[in-house]
Amino acid sequence: MATNRTFTMIKPDAVEKGHIGGILSMITEAGFRIVSLKLTQLTLADAQAFYAVHKERPFFGELVEFMTRGPIVAAILEKENAVEDFRALIGATNPADAAEGTIRKKYATSVGENAVHGSDSDENAAIESNFHFAGREQF
Ligand code: ABT
Ligand code: MG
Image (spheres, rainbow, N blue to C red):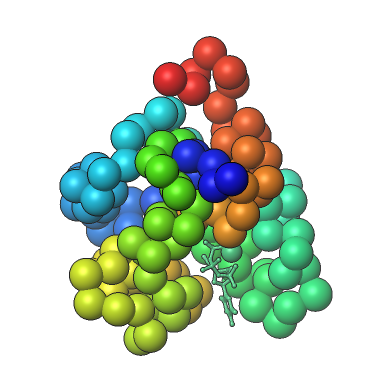
């Protein structure tokens, strides 16, 4: 059964450029309900843990540096089929391949600075959500 929740981050590039409002609008207009929301900043250890799956990749250092360079917006979102539908809404990792109408098509700069994160599985959505939000902050 598809879960009805996913986790997202508006990444430092999009926060720096003033796109928080535009991105949250696209998210709510697509039918997602905001369950949890905050402005926060990842520590080096947070970013290394979050992207541990990429730790042997050549871009790991740059990725961690990027994700820690400024504030991010963390949020939990709810909708039927949330994980898959949200990945569709954000579009391809590389904005050059992202479809028209997606968040990355509109707001991402490059494969490295791609404006938003969306969980890639129900299991990771739960892990990422509980990392950022206490139970009493999940509405
Ligand atoms: P995330 O939502 O950040 O996990 O992105 P996504 O799942 O779409 O893409 P993956 B494959 O998980 O990439 C994670 C981050 O690594 C960056 N990256 C990826 C590069 O910088 N160069 C590369 O060649 C690849 C494959 C993009 C992702 N994000 N950030 N920030
Ligand atoms: Mg990913």
